[in-house]
Image (cartoon, rainbow, N blue to C red; front, top):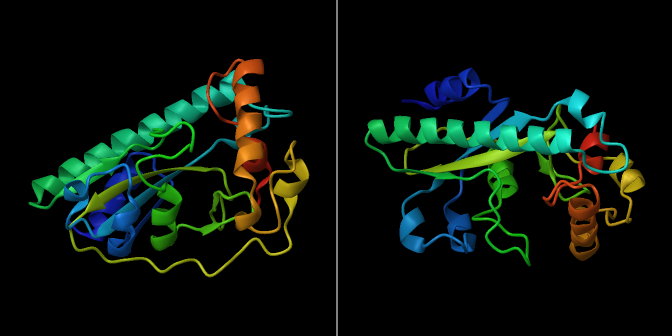
Length: 218
């Protein structure tokens, strides 16, 4: 099964964007995965799915339960599609490892098995915005991500040569001024404290916000 066939399968499942990149040098940074789990898995498939603009319209001062449900359903579809791609790759005699769309391994550091956005960068899906989220050229940050690692030789996509330019909408909308001029200036501690507040006061029970996601429009 070629790159094109895998892409066709992903898109038929409702995935919005698909890309592949060579990620061998990133493997040592997959701290939550055992080295033997990823040995030989030098290619990363990035799957992205669009967040509904209509759902985000309801996010005015913080996350809503509607947004929470939508967020969970998008993650579920991503995970199901990653599994289907994994099974297809394995059927061809190659190895594949699906990585959950949204599963926190370290709650204090808010880290997962790996950084989906770093795989997405290699796969030509977008760039890292001022809000420290992946920004797609058309969808902005209105995108959820999942990853499949594989040893199947794949055609790779070129990184996106673009940035946020003069746009500062995420800076303007952030309720705690956690976003700076570059993603390296993003204040993770301040952002996390606000997410904890939202989880409790807005009765969503999960560390989500949606404000800078909503504002991001390339």
